[in-house]
Image 1 (cartoon, rainbow, N blue to C red):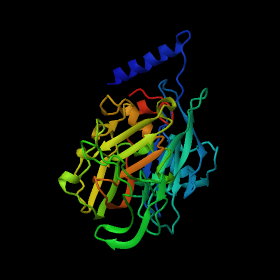
Image 2: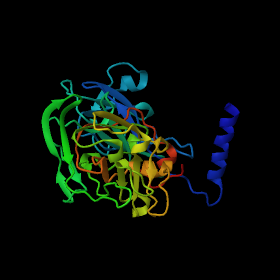
Image 3: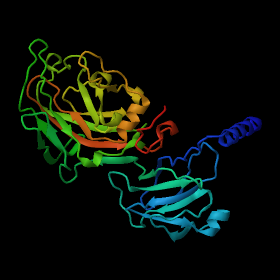
Image 4: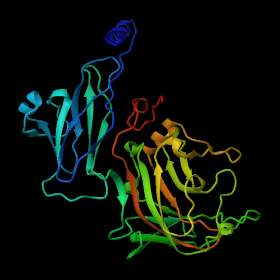
Amino acid sequence: AAARVSAAAAAVAVVAMLPGAVAEAPLAPHQLVVVEAGGDAVVTLKGYDLDGDALLAKLKTVAASGSTYQLSKVFSDYGYEPKQGSAMHSGESVTGSKNRVYYKRPPVDTKKVGAWGEFTYTVSDGSSTSEPGMVTLVPSSGILVGSNFARNAEGWTITGNKAASIPASYESSSRGLLNHYVHGADDTIHTHLTAGDDQSLWYFQAPSSFLGHHGIAYGGTLDFVLSSFHGDFSADKLNTGVGSSDLHLVVLTCDKCDTNRGVTIAFPLKKTKAFTGTTAQYSLSLKESAGWVKDPKNSLAKWAAPSKCDFIELLSGLSSVKILGDFTSWYESVALDTVQIKNTKAQVPICAQGTPDASKCSC
């Protein structure tokens, strides 16, 4: 094993010395760190460098919630308490051994529905500096972003009805698994002449908190609860999806993906349990192999499984998240509750981190 490592290192050194050889810039991989409420964590800002160079880390931004510190000298050198050194600021180089910093929550802390926050960092080999990597800090629940509708509709809207978009209705009561929730209803029907499906489908559309860079969610789950107040959910009254696209339970869109051509990836309802109007919990794996399909942008082509690069780039630039509300070919009312994107372990491979938004991906 040692011989193989030495040979690999020698090969890298030889390539680096070849005339015209271009040294690879280092990478600052995205990380996911679980921190309990009121807790702390020592975070290693581990860079990745194909040339085998020693790397120095620097904080680009600090987390808006909680505090980030250098390691104390005694902890950095010997591993003895206290861990906390001087407070860190944006643009400050990391002095702790192994490029480690110390993150601490306030002593009086409250769990939240979502990540504590994030900070970004870069690594340098002395001649080139990486693009920023993101360290996302989450509570033990692993919730990166979520809506539990404790006080209001939290910006969720209804799309696909007569109006392009209207606010989702909010209900502060409880009903089984529903405990403060939003709901919507059909207000237009466009029946397919032969299949009988309602072609004018309405969806719950997520607010801005669910959009943007959630690449670190890769390998986690999208969870939510659905229920219904009225509607005929008999088998012969259910929408099945007309054409090659099927009926999609969830639709994710990234407008800037594929060099601004846009990418849409959806989860077909037939790949999970059917919704029959009774309260149902869903947990969809956020991996390309879990049953997701990609829009081919050709009505004659089938929606097929996306690549790993497709899926990670989409999660890294979400511009729309929609959950189906229109399950029947006639009028119905459907409720949505406890929507969460969750993960507790970073699973984005290095091959998808050529750029922070995964637009450069070789997986």
